[in-house]
Image (tube, rainbow, N blue to C red):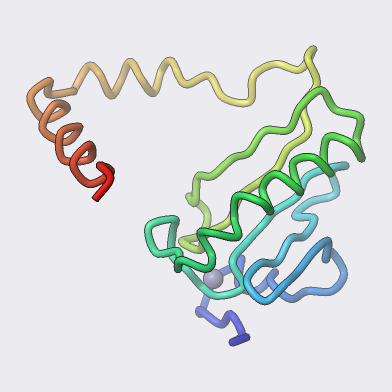
Length: 141
Ligand SMILES: [Zn+2]
């Protein structure tokens, strides 16, 4: 397994750190990213920029690991559910955040302003054209 060494990448810096380690294998590294019960960050061991760059091996192992970590987060914390967040705004290194959530907690994200702003500047023809391209790319071959 090659070390993750992209310069200036804080996820690379965290991968392999022993003090917050929760799980690791040849492909993945899971750790506690903050002093918050149940928060788990899962990252590729290699510096992979995003979901679009995952190898077949990484992609195939992701689903079972997401299920296992999500289940562990819910069971260990007694939470109602676990949220899975992927933004990648702080680092261009594929990582997911698992967050235990309870019913009485407010939503993590109110996406209505984002949707409204995007739709206000949206181009209906562009939306349809991009949707058609994506549909074509995802069609079974
Ligand atoms: Zn990195």
